[in-house]
Every structure is written in C-alpha cells, then in structure tokens.
Length: 189
Ligand code: AMP
Image (cartoon, rainbow, N blue to C red; front, side):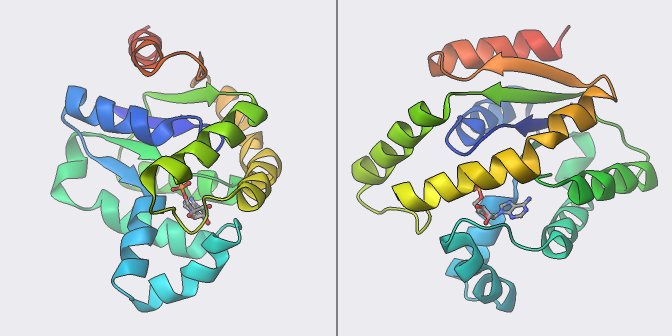
C-alpha cells in the first residue's frame, strides 16, 4: 500500500497516518517529523530548516525531495508507505512521480482530508495548550500563515492527482475513528 495523505495543517494527517501504519504494517513517512528530528539533533539540515519552519514557510523542495528519496531506499519502505506532509508543492509532486518511476513503484491513492480552516485554528491552539510543550510552529499567527501556504502551494495538488485518477476525499471534521474508517473504505474501493 502506497498512500499520500493530503490536507491542511491540523486536519489529522499525522493522527490518521499513525493508525494506518499500525493497521497496514508499513512506515509513516513524515517530512515534518524528520525535519523536527534534525532540529533536535542540531544537524546542518535542522539548523537551516528551523527558522523557516518556525515562521510557517516551506523548506526548500531540494531538501525535502532529498529526505524522501533517501527514505524510499530503506528496507522498510519496500512494502509500502504512508506519506504525510509530502508532497507540498507541484515541484515536489513531479519529483515524487519521477522517483516512483525510477524505483518501479506506483501510488495506490491520495487521500484528501478536508476541514474548515476555523476548526483547524481551534484544534491547533488546543494542541498547544494541552501538550504544554508547544511546537515552535503551533501558535495562531503561524498557523494562519501555514493555512495560507497550504491554500496557495499545496491545495493545487488535489487537481494534480485528480488528473491521475488517484484522489479520494474524506471529511476530516468527523471523529478520529470515523475518519479512519472512511479512509479504509476509500482506499479499498
Ligand atoms: P508538518 O509536521 O507536516 O506540519 O510540517 C511542519 C513544517 O515542516 C512545515 O510547516 C514546513 O515548514 C516543513 N515541511 C514539512 N514537510 C515539508 C515539505 N514537504 N515541503 C516543505 N516544507 C515542509
């Protein structure tokens, strides 16, 4: 199973990805998680990415394409994967298509998780409050910036993948278990 989860920040991609990787026994490939680990480890890539992430912008296509290309070569990705937070731009989607061709792989589906931007602002503000340790990019101003970036740079990927006949749309405002059930139905149809 090779899936992409597409949707705005806070729509539940990470939560759903974690549930689905357990169900399917395939790895969760989150460029955001990999970048946050690089920041924690203070690698050159992490140091370069931190400021960009903290203000809600996208790190360069070159960096994230490199992360994914390397990750695809790991043994565990041979059985499939769930991409969460990648691709986020048309350039990334084109690079991904090329990587898949080169590695003789194809996508099974792109799940678009939809949600009202105002609901998302409320969710993320809560996530920051409840965890006590807010992510650097979990405040309302940065979130609004991330939602704008999503609309401008990432939302066009729905059309991109619609042209490949891969998009299944799921309402992300339902309870978590219902979103999971809807995704499972969508990818098995
Ligand atoms: P996420 O955890 O997916 O919400 O990502 C957190 C932040 O990491 C984003 O706001 C971006 O700054 C950066 N990031 C993650 N994935 C990508 C990507 N595919 N392209 C560019 N920037 C990314």
